Length: 364
Image (cartoon, rainbow, N blue to C red; front, side):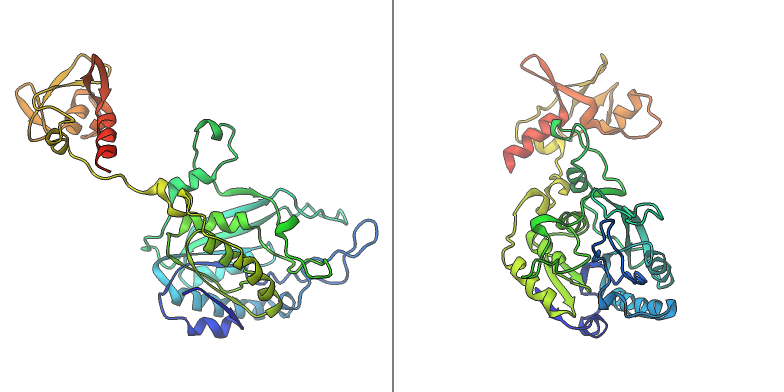
């Protein structure tokens, strides 16, 4: 299943079966339209993205045709409930987005990757280009894509009180540094290998929140195999296509040293739904008692639990969720009764939700 392919993505994508890929991450050529030599203030040449693979286009039509071809193949091979992420700078992302919509992709989010250590604008002629944009999309509006919502909360770890247990929704602005230091792959002469190598933390986050353990992740522009490396780390299968053998050779060395981290993030354990439990089961196992009092939280109201799992109140049997809503004068017909009812244990009132958690732990 895991495969590193050296070749042209327009040719290699055609060989992949229909609807066989769970997640795609694409980092296509930016077509930076670089003209001339850019120098730093002290006069040294700045080696930005001026590679042959990024400068092979001559017109917008040429770039758009190329983009349409590879995106069409990605749409074909993407599973009906899969999703795709595409990253780009200001030079290309708007064209890519328009083509994706024309092809029928449905946008979930656009995400701003805010670079915490961006390259400065040496000439001082425009704003510092400190971000790139990612588009997260599905094959159709009906796609039931993977989103590990609670896992995403766990990865939103730069909030003030994270270490104290606070969790917040992950937003669409991600502050992540540009790939640097030991993570940046270099040639034997010390030069950086790939001008737009993406940080591992960016791919780790994308793969963790939008795929499952054992899913297949495809990168049609594999580069130094960052996507493959993070897929392996998170226990996903991977397919990377890259036409430049030099990138692959160095990338494979990194890939060989990656091991599966076997973590809660990799398993998306935060998003696993707990085992369903009924009051009848807890009565049968002795965690609750037939005809014992149920106390409505923060009130003097009392109901009695029946063998069938319903509550007896004012000579009527009713489920605890509906009764809680009724007694609370809620606009909803049902409330989560586990959070509203309590029982007494050793003279202390304990929520039914706590009793349920104890029961789950006992049978796990």
